[in-house]
Amino acid sequence: MKILIAVDGSPFTKRMLGYVAAHDELFGPAHEYTLLTAVPAVPPRAAAVIDKQTLAEYYADEAEKVLKPVRTFFEKQGLKAKTSFKVGHPAEVITKAATTGKFELLVMGSHGHNALGNLVLGSVATKVLADCKTPVLLIR
Image (tube, rainbow, N blue to C red):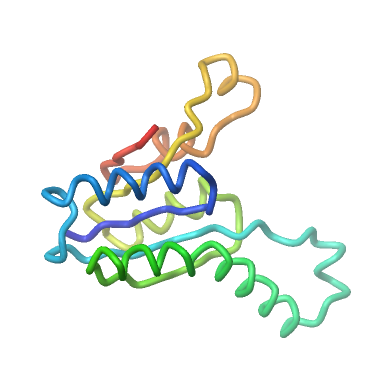
């Protein structure tokens, strides 16, 4: 199975990874994993005065801060995973990657806001669930 694991480095990512580790009957080495993180874009006015190389390095460094510990976790579990990052809003990045990458399952953590919190604040998980055609395993 081709599985996309969306990570952001938060405690909710750690909880989701704990679930993956505890359920080795579902998540084993037979699957193909891709770890994805979304890096928020630098505001356009600021990006306009930064050279492209510096901006690209900044995005790569920010992504690596999130991906490195998750990659280490996967290695300790005996699982191989590709890593990827995209710049943009997390919900849009995750939904687009799940669709264009033809993943069979998307796994992600959730903050578990209540209905009012989602209505007022919005939620990456809520937006992904609404827009993504790929099956989503949401860990709370």
